[in-house]
Amino acid sequence: MKKEKNYKPLIAGAVLLIVGIVLALYTHHTSYQESLTVGTELKEVTAAIKDLEAGTGTGDLEALKASKAALTDQKLSLERPYSYSLALVFFSILLTLKGLYNALFAAAPAPKAGIKRLAQAGLLAALCYIGFAFFKIDIPVGAEKTAFHFGNVFCVLAALLVGGFWGGLAGAVGMTIGDLTTTYVTSAPKTFVLKLFIGLIVGFVAHNIFKLDRDNHSKAYVARVTVFASFCGMAFNVVADPLVGYFYKTYLLGVPQDLAKALAKISALTTSVNAVVAVIFASIFYLALRPALKKAGLFVQVIPETAREAKEREAKECETKEKENTKGNDKKDKGTENR
Image (tube, rainbow, N blue to C red):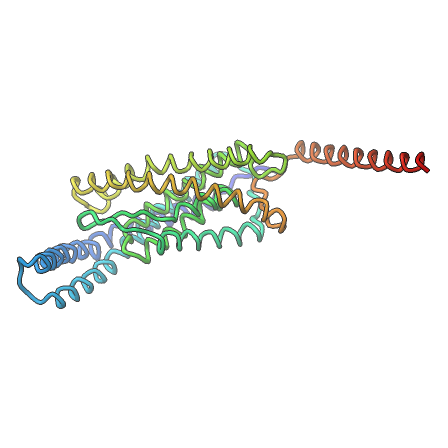
């Protein structure tokens, strides 16, 4: 396939990056600053509720709870514009880097994704959203919080089933929507980048290195590669999530360093537990789905078959047919002799 330089992603990425930076700067100095003020009021109301429940405070408990709910909703609505802007900035940076690579090093046009891959990627994005939004346990840390959840299970599973790019994109989109529609709205930009990279790593190890999508592997080989690829993606997340989270919250969200450090430590624990859960369940789901998808004709070949692999496969098929024909002829000859 002829390699061509493509400048369109670079131009689109650069334009979106400029727009994203302008929007991020504007929303940071307007709505996000207002959200910090509302956050201070929310802390005071929360403290007053705790005092009342402990019997050391005065006031109307129901009114304070209603005020807390209203302030929480107001805070989230004020945080969303800045979070959307940061998500646009992070996305445009990735697109610009991809465009820069295409402009400097000519690359062959990527093959179009098939309907099977797109449909499975969409379904898995929805499962990533459900796994995070509905199957999670929140752990409050001051005004912030982290969580145990099942979202990473489907992010890893997506990369195993449909490849690193589409699987990572499914995880990034699904779990970013999960952040944007819950109280984790400010974590959405970070989530998009980290989940995309989890998918890319799992997909690269599973399919680019070990060719997991090929049919000529034993069950033991498939099981080993599945677990190892899942482990590689989640090992990255165990290190990157607390580290990136610390700098993201400190320098982009303005969270005090002491609180950011506490969040990073607790995040390391929850991320480790989430990683173990993801490796175990994603591996089980993949090993169960692989034969079923093959039988139904829905299994996705992630890496296109090379000419050499096609020749080897055809040679093996011919050899198998010849053996079957030979066995059949031998049985006929024996039957004739017996007569």
